[in-house]
Image (cartoon, rainbow, N blue to C red; front, top):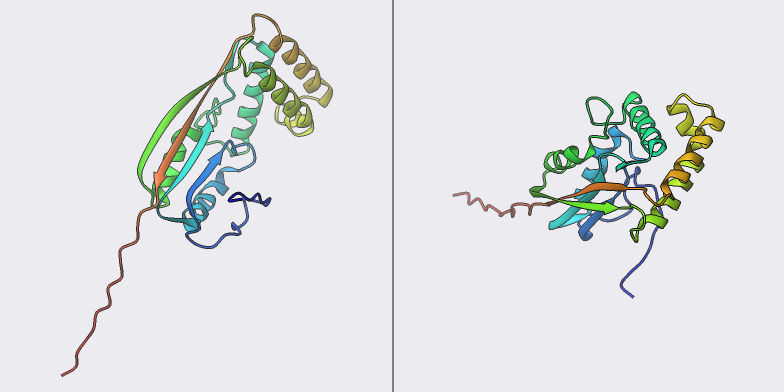
Length: 202
């Protein structure tokens, strides 16, 4: 009874009153939030978080490291394409550069007590996450073929063929893949209390 769900565009002003939440949790939104949109988004998160509340961001710098040549080729195409478009924070496009940037976002937005924690997602065969992760990335790269093939300077047919090869490699018995992601969080500081100063005129 204390849970509601709401859809909207997080790139617009958030439809909540000031100081509405004790915790604002952001997870894996790098794919659709461009470089220039991050600072105003974090400012909005600060606005809707109560003083003393927490803003928490979980993101990865890349799509993981695997022994699949096709997976590595596809994810490198995507990262390099984001870099060319100016939507990456890294200097060379070999990663998104988002993990180190998250702490900077929070600091510039006025948050304090910045902290980080790393996590490992093992999607190797036959780990529990393998099947769902494989299905997710195959679907994502197929659905995004029109856009992603342009980033890679390939035809859609060439891109789909590469995704098909990736799927074959990922469902093999010797497939190995690990993704490292980081949660960064900070506290919204309490605002100094305003004291009323009375002036007595003699």
